[in-house]
Every structure is written in C-alpha cells, then in structure tokens.
Length: 315
Image 1 (spheres, helix red, strand yellow):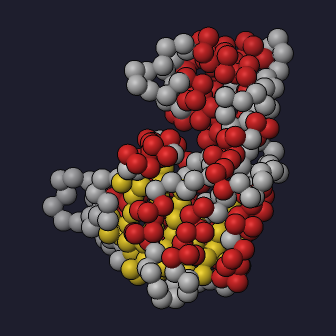
Image 2: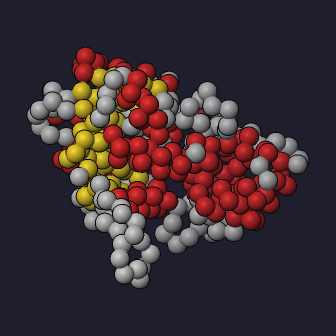
Image 3: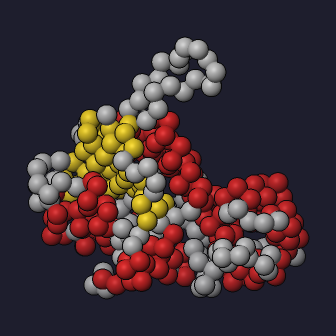
C-alpha cells in the first residue's frame, strides 16, 4: 500500500490534453473515468469543473482506496466503483446513470503498480509473477507460464508483446518449468535476456516486451478495450466525447480501427455499386493523428513518452 500523502507516486499522463478535449469549464455534466487508477486525472477533472459529477471505475482495490483519499475534496460529486471498464454500462445502470457526457480511458498499468514489487508488473524489481490488476482474480503470470502450452505461449509473446522469435522463448519457458516451476520476476527477466538478447534497434528491452505480453494475457486487456469502446459509444450523449490514452501499438490500433469504423458511412467491400450495409456513422474523430505528450512533459514523466491519445465525439 502506498502512502497517500506522497504526491510524486503518480503523475497523470497528458492531463492538459484530457482537460482541453473532454471537460467544459462549467456546466452540469457526467464524466466517467474508466481507469481511475490513483485519481490523478479525476482530481484535475473535478477541479476544472465544480458542477460535474464523476464516476470512477477500477479493478484494483488499492487504487480505489488511494483515489478515495485523493478525491476527498469532492466526494459529494464522486462515485467510485470496483469493476472492469468493459462493464461500464452495467456499472452506470447500477447507480442510475443512463448516459455520460465524457469518458476517459487511460490504458495500461500505473506507475505505483509498477513500483510495487509484490505486484510483479516490472522486471526491474524482484517479486512474484503475479501481474493481476484485480488481485482476487485466479489467473496469474506464474499460472500461465507453468501451465500454458507452447502454442499458447507463442501466441502471447508474439501477438501481445511483438517479441522476435517467440517460439524460442516459449520452448525455453516450458523446458525450464520441467525442472522447477516459475515463481519470480527476476528469473523470467534473466531468461528473456539470455534467449532473446538482442532488442530491436531503438526498441524496448526484451524483458519489457515479455512482461507486457504476460500482463495483457493475465488481465485480458485487449478484449476488455474492445468491449469497453463498444459500450462507451452506446452510453455517450450526442456531443459527448471519449478519449483513450494508450501506450503501445496493439492498443492504439484497436482504438484507431473502432473510431474509424464508427465514423465511416459505408462499410461494404470496395467495388459494390450501391451501399448495402446501411451503416450509419455515430462518431466524429477529432484527432486524425494521435496526440502525443510534449517534450516538457516527457522530461518530467518518462512514462508519457510512449503515450498516444485519440479522441472522438458522438454524433
């Protein structure tokens, strides 16, 4: 558990852009922070508009407890609910919210979670191979490494981490677990460096890619993102906006494709003389290219260097 008095533990990424695109300075509105985390974005949102009401959603009990303290200055305007962001429609229904005016998704793992060695998110600290956002979930990184088939491991390393030579790494993981089970982050990081010692030019270190892949698999993050965006589009009021901050190409591609699809008039295959799909666009994309953090922000917060933000408006 983190000391809630330490304000340096978490810096919200691209907060100026979030406020500019999502939050009006005044007027009653309802905002959903689907990835509440440690309350950084929500705190700034509530400070900018003293009339808005905010719903914060997160899977992590620690994060919710931390955020409750951070947001205590406006708890009369806040509802914090534990849950998956793909469950946004059901969660809103549970508090009698029929729609929302703005929705924020800041995808990925937060800095405090990374820095907690017992959570197992980072190869920089030795800890258990956990990686669960929701610590009551049954699936852990160790469970995957110790029980998944070679084919399943290849899929995880290749499709979620974009690791070069995923077969080589998967085979090494299986061979190692036949001697003793996987337990700690340090031993996995060492294997990754030993088997795949040459990172891509200018790319992330191999252990980072492997840990990213396992984290996505443990928390089913890509499916969660797809399902949440489908739900968000439904619950937004006309003129309402959704902003998504992602940190790697897999997430950004999902956001880009869904926004593009829902902003397109016809989804028929090319070459048909007359549209037969009857698709009606429901979004207007406000960011033709993803927004990125400024050099000044990156200097303060290195995590912002890989952030990409896309914004769309409900028609």
